[in-house]
Length: 126
Image (tube, rainbow, N blue to C red; front, top):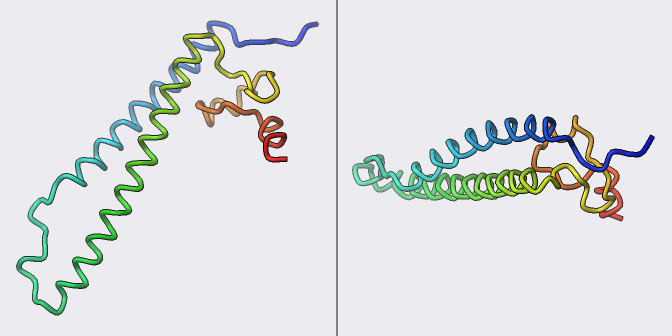
């Protein structure tokens, strides 16, 4: 029996649904993060005593920086999911870019934007 070289259209459709669900959730989270970066919602340090003002401003800045980092990670994740949808359309989804073999379904269900199998990841790191 020959080794399977790509997933069937039905299998690709299953993965598409998984990716679309993750993409919807990721986009919502990204929108929430970017919205929180844009909103000052009146919670500033203007009415705080000078002693605590410096501490609060520092904490506020750190919080904004962390939110910005989270938003950037989410944006990258969204781009990876969109790229996975393109691979589904091209029928190249699930093929390890190092070994050329199919990435196991179990891995793709957990990490649907994966482009490397575990074997391929190990080869790449060596």
